[in-house]
Image (cartoon, rainbow, N blue to C red; front, side, top):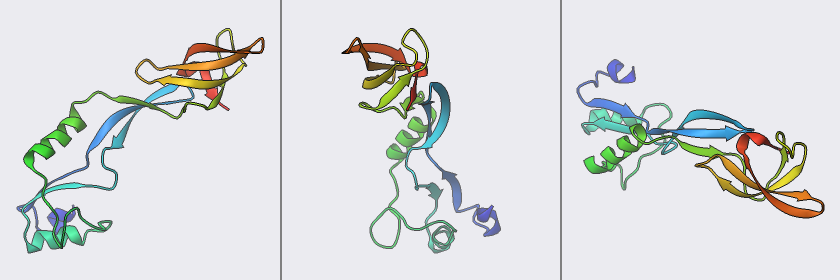
Length: 151
């Protein structure tokens, strides 16, 4: 919008915010969300001259640029291709709010309502290894993310 209102279509060609899909697991449910690869950064494909530089520099929300001195440092074509490939081709990576050492409650299965402590997290398999106190002994048990909830 701003590009066309400032008549910069012939100098500013593309604006790209690199994102990647990520699988977030919260309280046992999976959701695919888009996360920014470089939070706070925007890639702009443009011909750098005084006019285009003025438009980008004075865009609301723009606070600075990567580079030394007064002008931005251009990325190499190879670096940009790598960023685009990561943004478009890679499979979603699982993430979770669970942490090793965190106390959780088992919500399903034969150990339902037991308190446990996370000892390992396997994101690829969607599994946790937890320590459950059974008859006064810490027993390691493997559970899926959906079988526990945060306390």
